Length: 89
Image (tube, rainbow, N blue to C red):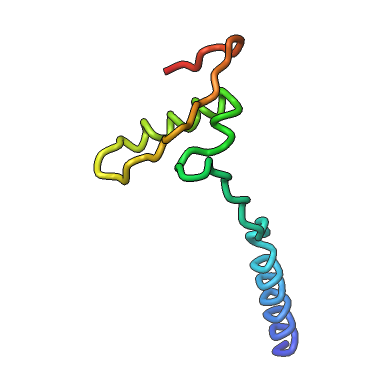
């Protein structure tokens, strides 16, 4: 009987170890860094795509702009679109 309990405990411990080992499983690669316009903090995508430009401005607004570093915008022109629908505010 004692041998059966030991095998049962070993089986349970093995099952727990296998289930714990299966957790996570996320992608271990880091996301690619965002390309910035040289000399600025503006993503290149914001200068070529109106949706990306809007997303960039939204992140600036969400940050509040109080107490942070100044944003370098020298010579940057954000993308616009004549056909895209306006984003809700």
